[in-house]
Amino acid sequence: MRIREFIPNSVAPTTTLTSKILCRYFANNICREGASCPFSHDRNSKPDRTCRYYLIGKCDFGTSCRYDHKRPPLDGVKAVKSVARTTGSPNATKVVENGCSNSEGVTTAATVNRSGHVFSVDATEFIPSWKVLALSEVNTVASGSLGSLPLCPYFETGDCDKGDKCQFVHGDVCDLCNVPCLHPTDTEQRAQHRRECIDAHEAAMEEAFAEARSADKICGICMENIRQVNAERKSRFGILEGCRHCFCLDCIRQWRRNQNDHFEKKTVRSCPECRTHSDFVVPATYWVEDQADKNDLIARFRENTKRKQCKYVKEGHIDDCPFGNKCFYKHELPDGTIVEGDSPRTLQRRRRPLYSEVWSFSDSDSEDDFSRITQGIISQAFNLV
Image (cartoon, rainbow, N blue to C red; front, side, top):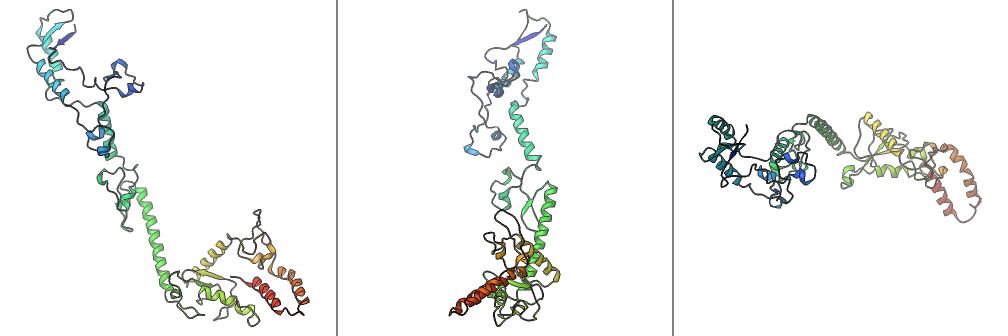
């Protein structure tokens, strides 16, 4: 026999505190609980727009938040306390399902004792399940999975004003670069950054040593300090492949262009100091002393020049380049084909009829024209730098 407990209407509260809250799943037509859902399925009821993050003190939007920043009313709690006090009073009447009074007080007392703890004054405050879920999610993000969160880019530059409320991770300070860019929990990121930081530190040290070696170098042609000739754009060095003498890049290039009746090709292609032959000049920002470093510099220079189009091969005429297959630059046709060309000696033999044609009109008074033509041919054939 089931027993119902009738309470006076003056103190009868709503059966559950959630019955006035609109079910958000029902509002989206996806509630699977149906009639057993503890929330309201009445679309006319006012939805609860209380900010769940404000209730736990972690809403970052403040006054601009789209939800309400207010505490829930305590009417429901007061009603629960009133029910507890009324249940224990003698005014409560116990009735049997058939409408007759119950003569067995033991059963009634047992029923009251079982349900009395639900309406106890010391009972915990009721919190809707969706608010409990939101609180657990926020706590999980705040305390647990930091490894999945990225570092705060503003904190690395010292511009983060969120403090402890920042949604990103504030990293630890690296002892090498003094930047807070180490993730507190990601060991792989910390190791990777340390390797990169050490490599950058070693590169900076090598650059400082190279600058110290280049600070007092004097050009063997103009006898000026190369670094002080043009300090703003930091004048470059002209490295000869055959010797270790130091020259400005501009000076050594000008020296190698001075081929005429007074200077032979062998002379201008040699070092101005030791007369050691060098086929080309390598431009360098810093002076290179060690032979291994010099070989590495030359190899990188040759590799870089292979990627650049030869200035003589402008419209696909391979024979216009006087260096032929000895040219350091790329000979690429308009269709993308790479052609090396013939040897410089073969190209010189092809140009011999031009000299005979020049001699045919040399009896005229255009000696200046003849000099200009021959000078252009020679400079085009032997300009290596």
